[in-house]
Length: 124
Image 1 (cartoon, rainbow, N blue to C red):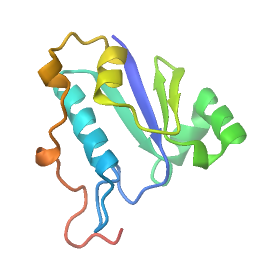
Image 2: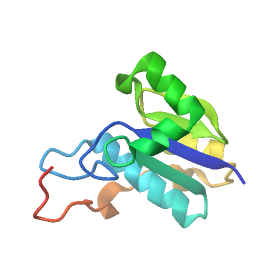
Image 3: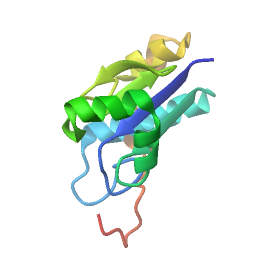
């Protein structure tokens, strides 16, 4: 089974889908991650602000940060190999990397079911 890891820049919460000015790309990506998890894909996200040791302890990620800096994030790895930097993957890319066989209709994104990670008391 393939393992996908996404190393996010510093965000106020684990998904970045919080606060009053939510980035639509993050909403779509969060929905894609949830969709993959529902299909039993091994996918993890790491937030630089909340999980800095994950960045330091992974040699490829630490090396990337030394060279590109946090401005180069997000960074996506598949089985510890860098596959994408500087932007979030599309559902189609994630599907291909996970080795899923799905229909075209399954790869269309429905962000209407995404929820914010923050409560009304969010201080994002």
